[in-house]
Image 1 (cartoon, rainbow, N blue to C red):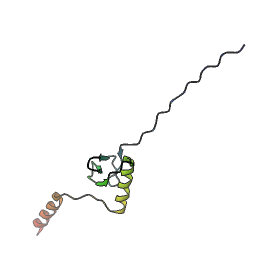
Image 2 (image 1 turned 120 degrees about the vertical axis):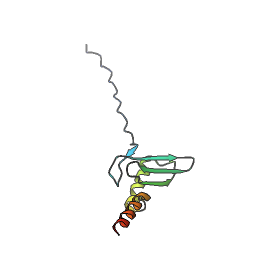
Image 3 (image 1 turned 60 degrees about the horizontal axis):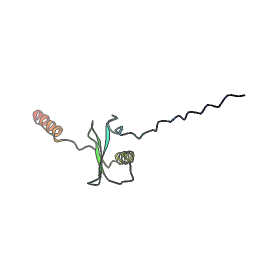
Image 4 (image 1 turned 90 degrees about the horizontal axis):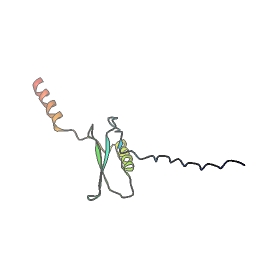
Length: 100
């Protein structure tokens, strides 16, 4: 005369999701986002704080994380960098003219 066995509740584990925003290798801020344009066939990786950016050819089998890893590899190899704006150069020229 035993008791009935209780039905065991199934606990669902929340699935881990891939990140959408990444850490910049140059400035260290968590502000790198991946913008994929399927029409143009381009994936752009851009840091919103320091302006570091790169473009890669779109591949439907790659996720945003894969483009970020390509971005890191390209940065470490020295293939990408920030294009300096003309404002900094003008300020430097003005300082040189004032001195001389």
